[in-house]
Image (cartoon, rainbow, N blue to C red; front, side, top):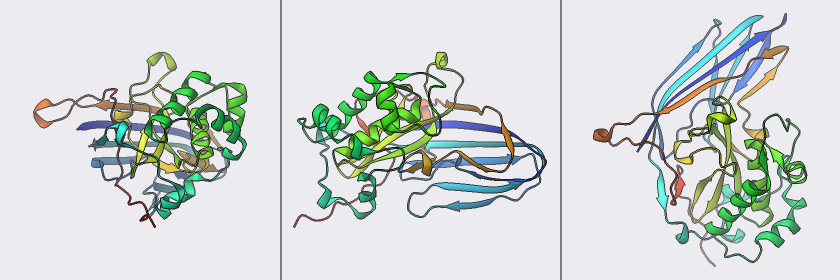
Length: 295
């Protein structure tokens, strides 16, 4: 089991008027992700509103800030008990047998224009065995063909843009992988968390975007950027692409500072807690979903 202590600090300066915020920085509660403790501190005397999406489990916080500085600190201790499977045992699920709640993740979306990457996907991956290994090949292809370079993309950069430019950050890697999977009728979704295990040379710890792909009967974790250790990822939210799970959506005149983030694994062999490591097993923090019966 993995135990992560997470701390997220966000600092804003609200201009003369007021501003509204919607945050998605609370750790999600899933079948294999348990929140042991959590705490929220706000510098302003505001009363936040909380909502958990009944389908995705994403936890949203909305608040109305007054002019001046606003500091938000979220701390949590999270236990991760991953479902593990042998990659050779996981086959793709034909569209006609996908659970209803999964079908929406095979369609194109704003940043993942899978309908424009059909030929590329077919040429590169169409002849491969249809299972986890093909998804892994897509992830590796993205990592090999896109260079991780900070400040090379913006909020308008899509998967097609990244395929052309061949540079980007974690969200861009995720969008390309998702689009290529969907072009092959493999359900894939955008996931957000923190970049546990990233090389310090890439910069200070930050939020992280990765991918979950539906094979077998679960959503399994992939990190196409190759910058982190997936076993240490704490999930905040999942959606069709980055538009669904922004860490902060701001309405009003606000100046933002860079986030201050730390994620540390707590090691206690006697209690069964170990350091996250790169492993060959397929990892999931979700419940199994039953495919539709064969008819």
